Amino acid sequence: MEPNIFQAHRLVLARHRRALNKAQLAKSAGLTPQMISAYEQDKKAPPSETLDRLALALDFPVAFFYAGSSDLLPRDAASFRSLARMKVSQANAALAAGSICMELNHWFEERFDLPAAALPDLDPGYIDAEGAAAHVRAAWGIGDAPITNVLHLLESHGVRVFALPTDHREVDAFSFWDEQENTPYILLGVHKTPERAIFDLAHELGHLVMHRDHAAPRGRDEEKQADQFASTLLMPRGDVHAASPRFPSLATLVTLKHRWKVSTAALNYRLHDLGLTSDWHYRSLCIEISRMGRDRELNSLPREQSQMLAKVFALLRAEGISRADIAEALHLYPADLDAVLNGLVLGSVDGDGVRTSGVRPNLRVVPSDQAGPAGIRGDG
Image (cartoon, rainbow, N blue to C red; front, side):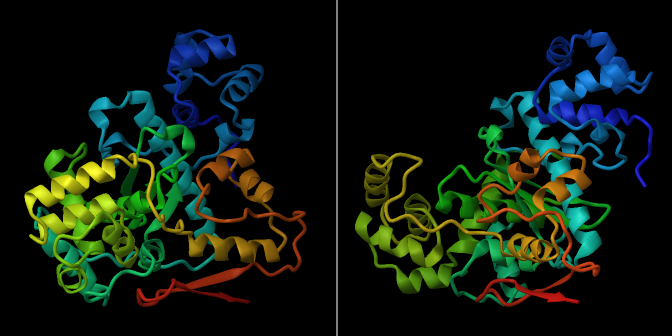
């Protein structure tokens, strides 16, 4: 049962989600910054009419500010690659989206049996990125084979992947652990090419595996480690040596990239890193690749979709539970629900909101090997 008491931290969460400072919110709601501070510090609760104005200015239902969940995700829970160039409001907005994703996942877990985290437990301070990637491949039984679908692989091992809202394009992706529930999360920027999004998934997995016990913000060395982890995970040394010719042309890279689901730039770098191309050949290919533009890929890959979310929504739809029902349960408007699902599922939860049975849907997600998508079974 939701408390009928104003929750000050929910006002902070809503303000952060909209990337507003106190002065901006005060102006929009016709209040003073001092009043906003008093409400957020829980020195007093806003009167009903004032809360209506705040809810309108923030585009959240009034009920959102009475819910007891969605604690603020602390700044040191996640690391952003471009933190030095990022405004505080941008980082706070992304973290607020992460808090909403946690609440959505908790709502799912109350109804469905989802995979528990099954990430290798490396010793704190483990910095051999290539060794860490090989350890993950061994633990997950992948060997040296190319990964068929990175998103499915992560989901089958308990990583919760949601979309980073498109109003946070300055954030590539970020990851964090819900330490209380022992659940890893990745928020993925889906505005990027499919190839770069896949690499971002592998990069963030590197942080989850190697840097769980490191304090954030993390430095340049840890970002390099995560990049090396991603490169090794996606393009294992043995398979690259076996399948790649020496001194390939750009056309060859464009064909080969489909084997490992990476960009031509990432493949070019990996080949050079493994000594399969000379410095001159690597730089020549870099020039050719740069002419295509950073946000364009020749013969681009299809975008990976979340199978877990698709199956969850299919079962909810069969039970007559609509997108609006889920948003209402989370005290959100549907647009905020859509924002963290955008690009990961082809369809939304449509329906008339009328349940087709009185039985609560029971979803069981059974991890499978990496050669196929996460096995998902609905019971009941």
